[in-house]
Image 1 (cartoon, rainbow, N blue to C red):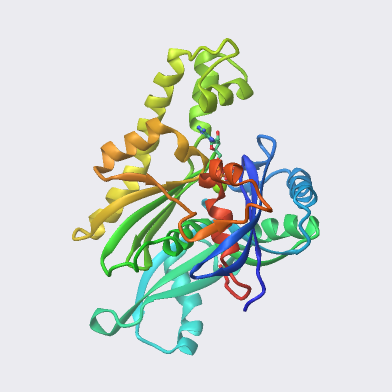
Image 2 (image 1 turned 180 degrees about the horizontal axis):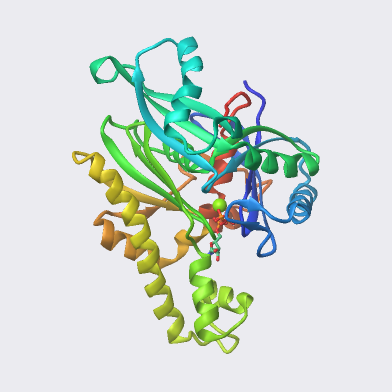
Length: 352
Ligand SMILES: Nc1ncnc2c1ncn2[C@@H]1O[C@H](COP(=O)(O)OP(=O)(O)OP(=O)(O)O)[C@@H](O)[C@H]1O
Ligand SMILES: [Mg+2]
């Protein structure tokens, strides 16, 4: 079996880490899980502004969880990553390897010397002698920065994945039955500053987009309208009550109005996808990420998309070793843990 990797999700509000035993396409067992908050403004728009703060948070997690292994899988998201579905004439793997940089010139708005390129064949035998690929381009600088903080913390980053694909990993592993061809689901990971959308058709990603909106939008608006600190606004959002145990009515109202804005943003992406795949029958939306816990947001997405909305449950095929981790803590943070679980399912050799 391939050497296991620890999933290390460097998020803008917290760092999440997951270790799995016996990770395989059939599942795995959580043997370590931790979450370490990082100060606001440490990561802005997917760019690490304060490397020291990230290194410190990673090191304190490794210490607290008494983790020994150093090999990790990381994820990147945001505007520095582009995933495009392209079609090319059917060709061999070797020919494709040569062709990819040229395709990137046509499809990727960054200079090809500034990006790490990768691809995944999603349909070998498409219509008219064509094959379909997902072309992935990530800015070298950003990949380098994320790998650098991990190295600085004494770790060995072996895989850098696209965040939107990690939720797909978790979704696929936890399905009750193998995906039917043509079955379409929408996966949205709603973080603090970035939300990643991945529309999966059968077993392949058909569309991904990262949007720069998430839980911070709620906190910022509560802070502004109630004239409170960021911390107080965050507490209102998560707990809904103030120190006297009173829920300011305004909080609920603000949550609802921002939920409409965020859901509207997601719907734009969904409409874009539907516009190019008119016959797609979308079955459901699965949410993950900490901000998926905002009930008003779940309802707003449901109304706009006219689709059932459910939290993505990572623990159908993945179990928790209760002698090692507190299952209540892991379950309470399941939405936040999805990206790191998806990363812990990766094997060395998997690229972006
Ligand atoms: N119970 C809750 N109710 C509302 N929001 C919550 C709750 N729990 C967590 N959140 C929000 O979830 C967000 C954190 O989620 P997550 O850990 O997925 O983000 P991140 O990975 O740190 O950020 P990003 O991926 O955007 O860089 C924060 O905005 C936090 O306020
Ligand atoms: Mg995140």
